[in-house]
Structure formats: structure tokens, C-alpha cells
Picture 1 (tube, rainbow, N blue to C red):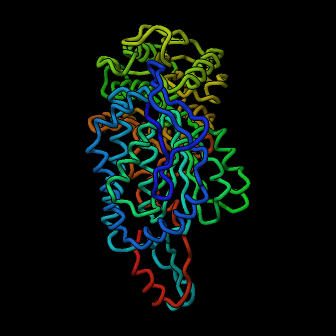
Picture 2 (cartoon, rainbow, N blue to C red):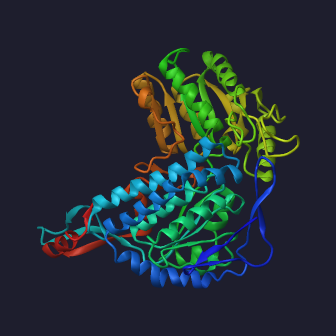
Length: 521
């Protein structure tokens, strides 16, 4: 069995004491173990600040981009190995594994290209100079410089590769070292990716460190120049935000948490049309990809009342053809959820939703499985429910079931769409399917205050449409309220989490000379 070690101060260190077992989600067999007990986090933080930070800040954006390109290339070279590990530890089908691993390498590559375009500069210039006096002799200019600290990345179990890489890409590009901690239960892929990054020789000493296990006293060591970036549950986010050190030292925090993402079918959508086919395809994909364990998965489906039953039946029919089982079997299109606790939570969540909605397909009973031993594995079925009353379906709007589960909600007007969506109290992404430009515009402005991204699908875009659950490096990822209130990626916007925006004020020509050494964005 593999023992995962932590990478601390440029050395691989095995933890001591009790280990946590990492399981194959289909067979429940142990595939690895991990522990971070005994890891010297003081040494890790000091090394990042003393060695990693200065080394990265001394590099130009183009130099940092070369590092990211190397990190991407080594993942591509070992792609098949990583996909196999994703099957062994995480319940991923090969397709799901590709979504995670390829998403990671693509994001690193995108930021490598971005940094290449930023060139020889080492800091960013935000916007144009602002005249402060009667003439340009006195001006102000916003400048973004690298923070002189360390970033701590705490990632969720569902995307061990992509989640780690997207944070690392922005961090390295901004010139800041990081310590990354994946969720222990599915850490095997992340651990191997980190090994590959280190073995490549591209990363400067102290710029990247890895924790296999718990964070110990790491948060107690954070200071005013540090960043804490977290992806996971709202409950954990509250604890991290309320940490005494975070509050007293003003640690910069970014959170991506729960999200009751919505998909909206417009009143003009008819069965058999291209936009209807796009709607069905996207909803089914977002419900079943990664077994619904995506922060961007569709949880609520809003359909015009007069079409709700027919559309829901079509969705249920497509979902019923999902082949659930051991991802090692080629025909399987959806594997198990990642852990026993995850299965328990999903089934409890289904029961809660069933108090206000009826099951159209799936449910709490496990159906036919391919290649799985009876009674083994953390399997749940793709489940579609339909709310009895959209306005009185509190559980649907309040509780995210983090699995292949979604609920249909019937609506009467575009205004009601906005009201129902807002009851989710903040989401990462909403999707709208309509060829009616006015409806799409009205709904966009109703959804925008409550979501970090809105995807509009129409007949004209159907041929090139990207599913709403796919996070794009060039667009921001995050959302208000329940979704955490944070923002990642988005090109240079993602780098700004790890940089300090400072207003430079002084003699105009001198201010301009300083600005000329940076890259204006």
C-alpha cells in the first residue's frame, strides 16, 4: 500500500502516528494511507517566506509562465497514470478523470500563456493614471505587487488535481509561494501530481509545499502578508474565517463553498429544437459528471409550468439510462461517490428533498450496478425530483445534496425565475436556455446579482456551447453568499488574490516612470 508523504522545506517527510486510509470507492479496498502528524509546519512557513517568496518575486512574469508550462507538460506526459489513480481513489470514470486532470493541465497552460504575454514585468499596473491636482504634475496610479507571505491552499475532495492546479497557477503567476493541502480521502492524485512537479525541477526552492493529512497548527502561523484560499463546505469555511489568527492578523481569505446552481428553460423552448436538446444534454451531464460531486453541478431546474411535467419526464428518461457501477468497467458512465460519509450525506439529503418533492427517477435504493460486488462501494443512483410547490419547497432552496441529485421547479413568469433563484442565497453558475433575446436579458439581470457566472445557451451558440459546469481560466470562478463570496481565476483577476493593490501618489512624470516598469491591465 502506498504511504503518502508531505513535501516540506524541499524534502519529502512521512508523518508519524495514526494514518488515514484512502479507499477505492467501488470496492472499499484501501489503496493508500496518509498522516501529517509530526510535520514541522513552522519550518514550512519560514522556508516559504525566506526562500520561495524571494525566488519567485525575482522572476519576470514570463519566467513564472515557463514554470507553469513545465508543470502542465509533465502532467500531460503522465496523463494515463494519473487517470488510473483517479479511478482507484475517487470513484472517477475515465471521462471524469480526464475532466479533472485535463482541466488542471489546461489551466496551468492557460496561465503560462498569460504570463508569457505579460513579458518581462514583475508587477501589474491597474488602469490608467488619475490626475489629482490642477494638472498632471500630481497624479495617482494603482499598482499591484506580490505579497511577501505564503499562500495556504485547502482543497476539496472532488477535484484533487484541478482544484490544486488552479490555485497554484494563479499563485505562481503572481509571484507567491504556496503550501497546498488536498482533502485526505482523495489525495492520491494530488500527491502524485506534486511529485511530478517537484521531479520536473521547474519550481524554485520553497515555492511549493504539500501536506498529506491534516493542517495541524498551520493556520496558527499565518500573518498579515499571507493568503488562505479554501474550497469546500460552508460549515468549514465559517470555522476558517473565524480562526483567531485569521481575524487578528488580517489574513487575506478567499472561499468557494456550497452552491445551489440553477438551469432555466425559457418559455419559448420546445421539445425537439436545438436549444431543447442542449438543455437536456447539459442538465444530464451536470447531474452525472463526477457523480454530481461538482460545485458547479445543476441542483435546481426551472421549467415553465405548462411544460414542466413533459420536460421532467424527458430528463428522467435520459437519466434512467445512466450506467452506474465500477469505473474499471468500460461501459460504466457514472461511478460511486467518493466516500462512505459522502454516500450517507447524499442519501440523507435525498430524504430531506423528498419531504417537498416527488421522485421521478432514482431515489435512495441502489439499482443495477455494473462490475460491483453486492454491498460494496459508495454507490447512489442519479435522482431527479419534482417539487410539489416551487414557492414552498424550502429544502430545495436551502440544502445542497452533493451528488447526482436535482429538483425540477415549475415557474410562471420571468420575475418568478429571479425570485426562486435568489432563494439559493448565492451560486457559482446559472444557465439559461432560450432563443428569446428579451427573456434571456431579463433573466440575466435577475440572476447576475446572485451568481458568479451566467451561461446563456441558444440555437446560435449550441454548436460551440461549453457545459455550464466547466470552469474557464479566463473567466472568474466564484459567487456571492452561500457560494463563499470569493473569486478565483479570470486571467489576471485570479492573480490579484496574491497581490497587494497599492495607490501610488506623487509627481506625475515619476509616477509614470514607475508604472512603465510594470504591465498595465
